[in-house]
Image 1 (spheres, rainbow, N blue to C red):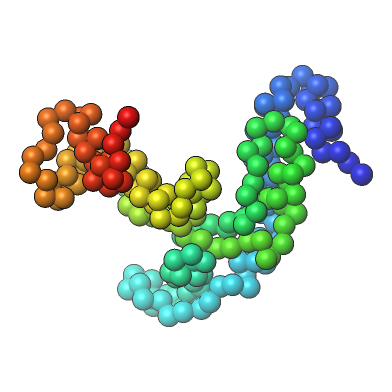
Image 2: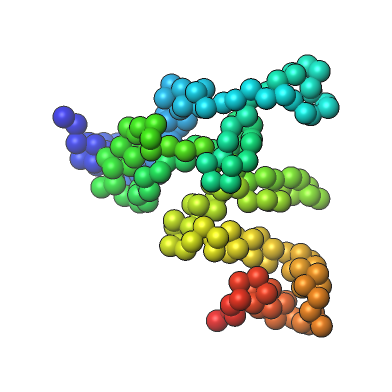
Length: 202
């Protein structure tokens, strides 16, 4: 039986690589292996449903398209609009001592431990790609990472997204019918957080 953690440490030493370098590579390699696996393909293949194509630009060529249901919001999405989520929380894989548990969680899984979730919807605005709607997968990931509820995670992510742009921050404040918009960027961000999360910035 192979001790994955021990073997990766041995290889790191013999190849003259740091454990951090090997850990980062192993994490990516395992995810890549899973992404191309017959198991993932089979899971998706058994859960797709053929529906009438309502897109006028492609409905003549493709009268029917395959759609997948998000396990959280229940929405219908194309494969490209979804991501496969592992129900077992993965470890951080920050060092090689996590290698075996990481590959067991990500690759050696079961259908009952997987779910299809919608992913972030993005579009290009003024040459930059922006999130226009957060998907259930990224919200759930934030929720698990920071130990907050799904609903709280959705609000926090939306706040972080809007607060990146002073223009969006001002628009939100104005649309909230606040008497006056603060003069400084810091004050506007503080007000935005209070409006969206009911919190003040420490």
